[in-house]
Length: 129
Picture 1 (cartoon, rainbow, N blue to C red):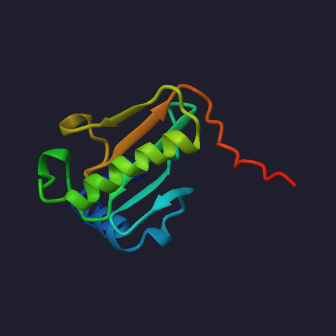
Picture 2 (tube, rainbow, N blue to C red):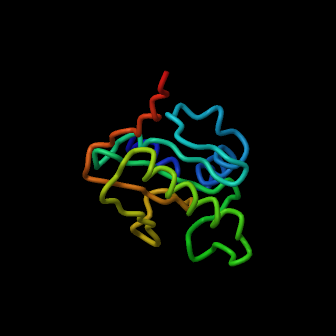
């Protein structure tokens, strides 16, 4: 994983990551949680919390500081995705974190949805009869 982060911070790696997240998510060996035309969400490969999901925009954006206010579709889907995951996994307490600058391990905008509570997927209601 450390090698991946070092590669990601090279000039070639930055372009590769942007290309993969925006055009070829199917090629990434990640466990998907959500995928829409504007975002991609997956379980963190090295989670630091019992529930740890990464949400990235499909449009290549380096950081939150570079996100254009016109990206309403992504922002709307981000909120809807977070709300849906919180309900789906019954998370009573959670955080949505975005890192920037030197706190950002990957040079690509990404959000961490984390919870210290073990996720308990909601069960569909039982039909009577």
